[in-house]
Length: 312
Image 1 (cartoon, rainbow, N blue to C red):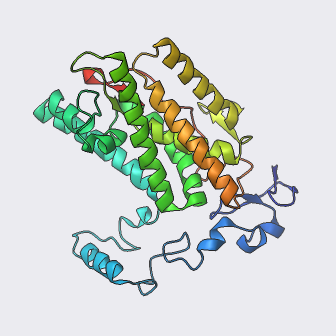
Image 2: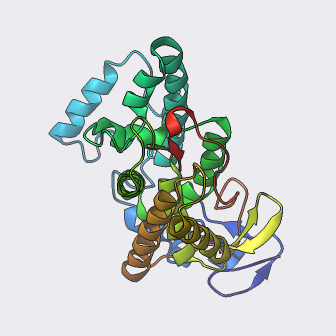
């Protein structure tokens, strides 16, 4: 049984709105009957209802130029093409970039060596001026399990946050939280005085925990399954993650896990979630639906990669 987010009626076969992610009874299932947050984007050419079929809507000079450039690509980028699934969907775009970057890491390390890979993909305390690593380090990872755990968190939580705030704001949240989390981690490594050639950070956990922080504020009682087994309210998972990070930062332990990056990403997400809650009429779903909402394990763990870099 599920409870309607509007009237509280219990439904054995509830409806889940694909625009806002809420759970509703038959009376309130239509977007206009539950004040759907997606309605505000109905006439927005870049909104969640834009299918991409009508190229005349909002076709400014810059848009026309962009379309002309897209037409020159050797692959079909239209609604029916192989990239149609990523149109207006930054969550899966970022996931694809993560796995592409991970494969590039392996190729670069095999062909050019660990130092070349480190210079391209690892944000290090020795070379913070390598500004490209501010971004590439978000998509790079320290191992297969590392990227798998981050992908699970982003896969389940990301689409829901993206529906709440829109693709553009979601992209900004993801990149900014990832960059700030990474810089915070190497900042504490500089303070601790890591040896030359050691230290550094890779991984999207800072961004993933920012996403989880937004969901925690919007619906703290949402039940998620820790490692797909243990049901816990998301606020417990968030509080536990924050507590673990604070303890390890204070004691200087934690192995190769970037706890400062975890904590900073979480704080950014909680702050942005509070902003969204105060400024937007957001209806958070009352339950997790596989493939349509948040869930999954709490975060990455395990050993890091070469060069003593930390994963986050």
